[in-house]
Each structure stands twice: as C-alpha cells, then as structure tokens.
Image (cartoon, rainbow, N blue to C red; front, side):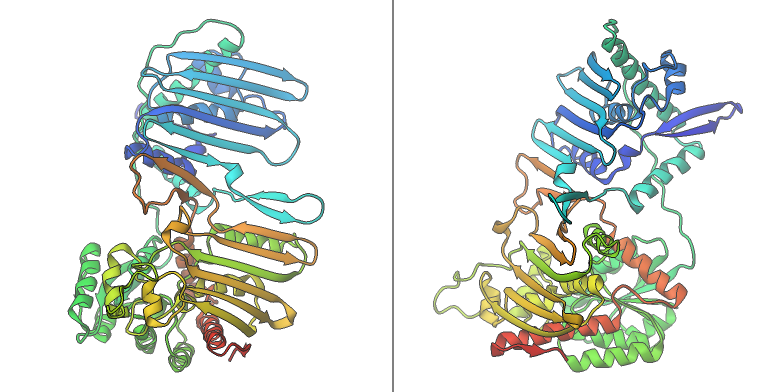
Length: 605
C-alpha cells in the first residue's frame, strides 16, 4: 500500500491510502470490461494470493487502529489481503452485507479465507496465504459476470526456463511504465487536492470490511450497513519532459497506428499531415481523415509542409513502394525518420535510404515490436546468463488473420483478385498490411518483426538462408503468386542457427490473433517464451467473432519505441532498429524469397 498525508484547507492533515493493484494493466482491463457492460453484472469474484513467509502481519496496523479500532497486534490483516478487499469493493461497487472469515496460523505463517456476500446476490471468495517458501508468489483474479467472465492468472503468464532439473517458470510481469505512471498520476491528483474525500471514504470502507472479517475470525458477530463505494478518479495527462519534437505524418494511406503509437509519448507532437499532390483521391481521403482526427492541417506538398511547420520528425507510412522515397526526402531536409514496415520493395531503394540517412546524420527507426514485454524478458534472461551462450533460436510468428476469401473459393472463370484493389478495400478491418501496387507475401510484410527479435537477441548478421513457401490459406495470395506461409532456416555469424515459421493462417486457427513464440536453446539451458504474455482472458455472450478472447496487458511497446527514438536523438545514439539493421533484415527476406524460387540455399547480400 502507498500512504500519503494530505493537508486540507484547514491545515489539518489527512492520511490516504492508494492500492497499487488497482493500476495493474490486467485489473484496469477487467474494470473497463465491467464498465462497458460486456461482462454483465458481477456474480462472483475469486482471488488467490499466496506469498512467501517473510514475517507478514499487517503493514498498516496504525490505519486499522485509527479507523476500525483494531489493536496494534497480530490480529491485523496482512497487507496483501487488504489490497484484495479493496479490489473486490472497487469492482463490485458496494459494501457486503454478509461476511464470513476463517484463519489457520502457526509458526510457518497464516492462511486466511474471507467470504463476502453483497446486496443483489454478488459474492466474493478471497484466500490469502503467506506460507510459501522464500521466493516468488502467486496471484489469480477471476470475475464471473452474468454475460461473460475475465481471468487474470499468473498460471497463464509464465514463460519456461530450462537450466537443469525440472523446467522453471518465470513470470511475465505486469508492472512497468504504465503501472508506475498511473500510480504517480493518482498521487499527483490527490496531492493537488482532487478527490481526497472519495479516496478516504474508499479506504474507510475497506477497513470496515477488514474489521468485520477480523471479528468473524474471532467468532465475533458484526453487521455492516451498506455504504456506497465511491469510484471516481480524476484523469490527468502524463507530464512531459525534455524537448518536444514536432512531427509530420508523411502519408497515412497504409496505417495510422505508427503515428498514433508515437504520440503516446509526451515528447512527440503531431503538427501536420502531408503527401504529394498527384496521389489518387482515396489516398487523399485517408490523409485528410487522420489530419481531422488530430485537428491538424493536411498539406498536399511534402517539402513545403516539412519546412513551414518546422518539423523535427517524419512518420512515414504510404504504400510500400513509396516508403524509401518519402524517408529519403525527409532526411535530405535534416528531418529524423520513423518508418512503417516493410523497408522497401527494391534493394536499390534500400541502399539509397542508407546513404541518405548516414549522409544527413538524422536518426532512423523502423517501427517494430522489440519492446514487447515478453521479448524484453527473453533478452534479459539471455544477458543474465540464465541459459549460457545461445546456440539456436526458433521463432514462430503466425498471424491468425484472414485476407479475404479462403484459397479455393474463387469460382472457375472468375478473374484473379487484384492485389491493390483488394488491399484498399481491406483497410476497413485493418488487414491491409501489404498495401501497394506490388503484391507482397508474409515474409516481406511481417518478417521484420521476428527477424528484428533475432537481431536484437543475438546481435549477429544472417549469412545464409534456405526457405520454402506456399500460398496455402488465402485466395488473394494464391492469385498473386505470393506466400502466406513460409519456413526459413537461417545461418548466422559465429555458427549460431535459427529457424522461422511465419504465416497468415486464418482467423479460425486461433482465438486471439495468433501463436507467436520464441524457443531459445543455450549452452546451459533453454527458454520457451510466449510473446502474448502477460494476458487476460475475457469471454462474454454475443462476443464479436473477431474480438480477441485473450487480451495483452502491460504492453508499452509504442511508448518505449518512441522513448528509444527520443533518447537516440538526445544522445546521438543508436535506435533499437536503425537503418543498417533494417537493410540487413530486408536482405535476409530477399534471400529467403530467392531461396523459395530456386529451391537452393542463398547467401545474404
């Protein structure tokens, strides 16, 4: 718990308590689902919290004594249990009218079981134990509603480490920048005098329930009058720091997620959308829509927009064939570049881009997924020597997305699906990743992501590849002769080997976007890592077919990419995926595609 002393208008101080568990991304997601009505009315909340025995009594006996007249002795409830009581009241929104609690305790620790009943029929079961041996603990939260349910369980958020004996589990932690920022926002709000009374009332309600549970454990009857639990919380922007970078979106005809990801960071400000005048009307319409959403101008002249709006950073996301051209033009004017994938469709353009970036001295970042929490955990385990020296890395990168009708659905005599026309129409549901006049398969469109992981985890170049590919699932890929499924063997510097399996395997193949995993073998152990973890399962009636059942939480990838880019500018350092690394990945993909065509191993150039 976080305790604050707040001075009120009469110069008297009030002590308020903040439960950091409320701000865990999984708990925030569940609350959002409840507030949106997707789970219906709460029927049952079940919480398990098991901790190691490190002498836990109550860490807040003074507060319990002040509010609930609990003696400052061993009768106080553990802090973890108080956190869970607060969480239950926050999710249910009312005080219980029935409380039962039992306890077992000895020299090895305590086991406490609290059972709550609420007006209207909702109920909660909380079990707490501090009898685990020294080390990690375990938490689980299940919320069962009248039309759906959500599950946040450490059991679902474990990666595997092999280093002798039985496999060991490493938790994919939820805490991180957003968790800390949310708590700091709450602290700043309270210290500014916002919502202090509500916070005090919430904590008083928790302590009333805690006192009733304590008395129930001592077989003392205790009744509670229903008191509404205040749920309001002021929202405030995260404070900015350092120089603010003025950003131009140079075309948003493919995706706007890069621009929206960049501005999650307070140092980046969107000031203009720009593109060339000769692009087609549908492209102008998309650019105008993004400009309107940011309430900024749309200028049909790239160079004029970069000059007149004093732009520091260009965010480039046109059709794939125009990626390098717009990035090169921005670099020529001394503007830093953040570019959408893929790098390009032609090696000559990739070489021109490298030359332009290095000649101008600006920074370049290829938008990627390297800051996803599970991937960073993998990096940390490797750098800590948990598995010794990596010897092989195997990457599975399956997107469970459709790209229109399945293969075999086109009737005899019907013309092939036109790639660009199909991708323009696919913009509505976000499945237009390969937008451009030239057809591109999954290796070209999505290969940047797993190959970016490989480069970050090893720091080595790929020397030779052997690859196979097929148009296995999607009619649009079959009609245009590009792969939607591929397998690649990669030989890296120093004898390290890797494999990649990648595909757009169809929405029916996975409930939540696809299976993305890393298997890392080392000289002294191994890792098995699911990229999606930590995650929360959410299920409810009439759930849209395309809505993911497992939701990622604690994903700060966009913010951390922007932070990395800002730091590179500030310190004249490298970005996590700079222009040289992006060129190397493009060359690896090009070699893999050539291997698919020839059936032979191909050297990466």
